[in-house]
Length: 225
Image (tube, rainbow, N blue to C red; front, side, top):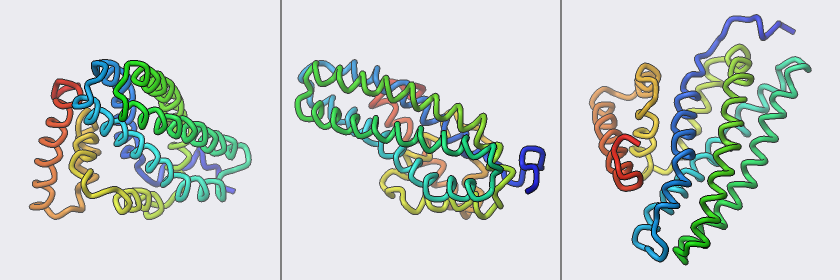
């Protein structure tokens, strides 16, 4: 088998890093957002709960695409000494899935009660989720993406994005793009939208930015969280 570590990269994996930037930021901030909701304030708890649900669903969706379309291809092709890295990614996904299940349970309780006790249980679960999210994303970028870049063909890598867009709720399109755009590499973000016809692309860019700013103001109290 070809030495994949020494081979030239065949695909640009920076889009994954751009997505990870959004995930790291919002999970880092999420527990603090929850803790700032006063006890019994259902009106404030609801949009914050919807935000947390959006984050959890996005992360689960992102990992499902990788489970289906990335790990199997890599396990077919990587040398035996690299396969444990792929298995590490899979085990981290499984651990995060368990935490997200717990997060969903805690979120449902707090959404109903808006109590201080349920608020703290949810925030503590978000703290735990953030630790494991960062551990996983750091390992994926340092150890897995270089392998994927040298192993996959461009159309195989592109399928991750195609499936991601296909399965994402349309109502979240503008917000998700805004999450990507904010703090994301401008060159990489432009590449994500490059295949969209120019008039539609301009509308998407405007909607993404304005939707993100409104959402950030509502959830974080600032347009620059």
